Image (tube, rainbow, N blue to C red; front, side, top):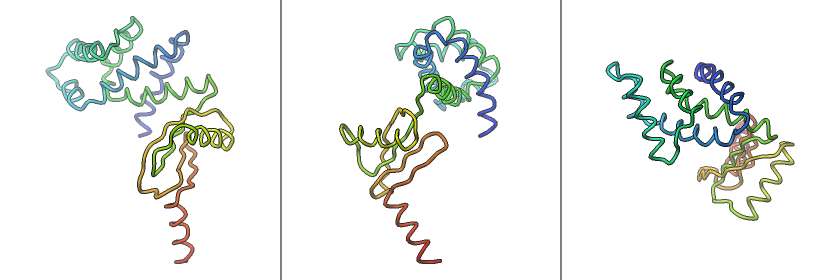
Length: 179
């Protein structure tokens, strides 16, 4: 995992520096490009010795065009460099690192809240406010359902985890009782 992160970092930093005028625009086409690069059929085609860089580029550009994203000059150059260097597989990690850089500039951090049940509306606003106070930063909160939690939430912000789930409490009780 560290190797992929190390390979992706220079690309994410270069995109961040070159796209500082329109980071949201870069993020939009990078998300689509990373989604395309996550497709196993596309990766298998790209890794084939019979596939040329031009064919791989054409395929990715076609996928992006079908999803409604025309390739800007910056996106074209980036995609060419990624393909020439055989780094199509690191695009999802480039996206993740680019988001971190973009969020750091705006003072935001991504947070994933795992819950056994959907959280919406006012409840989500309350949870977001509580987490922002707890982590002392503004958060971009997304909710993921994890029925194994039974109840409560588990929040992940970067490398920090706040586990206030029923499952966690039961595990703590089990450990205390068996010790």
